[in-house]
Amino acid sequence: MGEADRFLTPMAKAYATEKGFRVTQTAMQVYGGYGYMKDYIVEQFLRDAKFITIGEGTTGIQALDLVGRKLVQESEALLKGHLEDISKFCKESKNHRTLAHEIDILETAKEALSDVSMALVKIHKENFRVLALYATPYLELFGDVTVGWLLMWQAVIAEGRLTALAKEKGSRRTGG
Image 1 (spheres, rainbow, N blue to C red):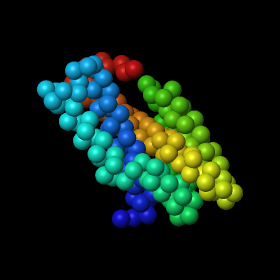
Image 2 (cartoon, rainbow, N blue to C red):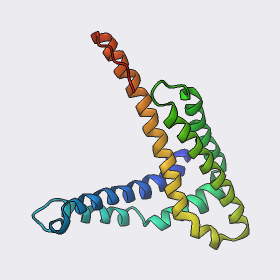
Image 3 (cartoon, helix red, strand yellow):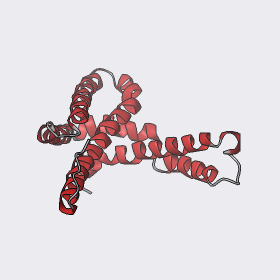
């Protein structure tokens, strides 16, 4: 496992499993009072999703790993590289014909993540206990920005491909 992979591991484990649990929790709510009955498979999905959040290492532990080890001790350079990758994408795509506004929002979120990250590095030097209080919200912010970037990247690729397919098939797809 490379250093960049280790840097993203806490997010991949905790962020993804927490979001998965929230999705199944929402699915359960759709059923109302009937949701937690064995008649509906969502009941099993919810139990399984909760187990995964525990089995992958609790979110709090993964969050502490992200801020306490990955961000502060091991990988400030990796964070910088990660943020630069997001910035590069935003600069290359800022004039996208249908997604420019969303890419601008992503750039703003990336700047917020950068600011929060640097603040946490400073807090770590002063008081680790305070850093620990911010670990889980930071992991969620880190995940939101990273997953938002990946989804936006996929959207840009998909929109380009759809436009090319429409042109190839003789359609007048206008986008947006």
